[in-house]
Length: 242
Image 1 (cartoon, rainbow, N blue to C red):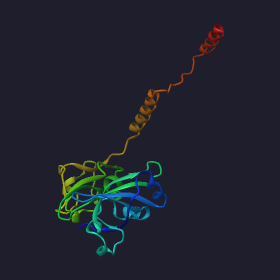
Image 2 (cartoon, rainbow, N blue to C red; image 1 turned 180 degrees about the vertical axis):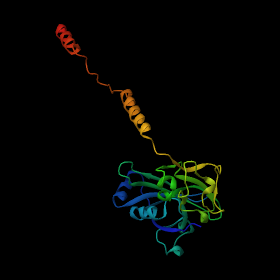
Image 3 (cartoon, one colour; image 1 turned 180 degrees about the horizontal axis):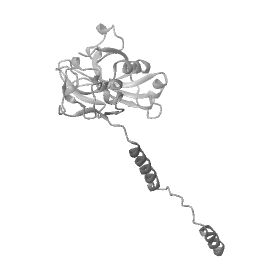
Image 4 (cartoon, rainbow, N blue to C red; image 1 turned 120 degrees about the vertical axis):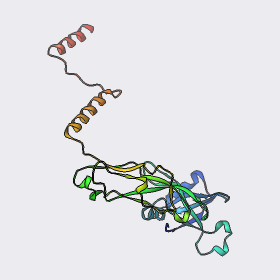
């Protein structure tokens, strides 16, 4: 069962470009919505949110405390603390700052479908890596699960330490998850494997291929050294044209 984490929020009544002032003050504009509830615009603290993501991951149950956590008696039911998950995050592609967060409010008695991060462990202990010099290949970084909100795992660990040869694989069926969590994928789907190291011949061929591809890029012309005597002929042609 996933562990809930708390996150404070404040009501927001500014939108569009007017939110830039709040961003400069270390706040992130966000919205919380869900089935049968009124959408609400909020502010969350940028530092608090980054700490939450670092500690608990993106697929964790969050108790969103709007406008104070201890004054539920003085708020309407719509303003009470809400059980939410992160539905979407918009980031600045250059600065990496969060620009906007979407929270989805869940009902604890209804199943949800969401992506959970796969965390790979044991790579250094895998014989195919440690002894054979192989390279870990991750076929997926996340997996979509279906479960009740209270059973949502914050992450799923993928133990690759048992991969002894290049013919060994980790399948969906090998993932250690609760029987209350469902993954709608073929159990034989490969999650991870160890690839053999490249040979010297393969590396040489790869370098040659890269050099050939560069000359095919539009605007890139491979300079050719003129043959002996050709350079003088070209100069004479230019003189004749003058």
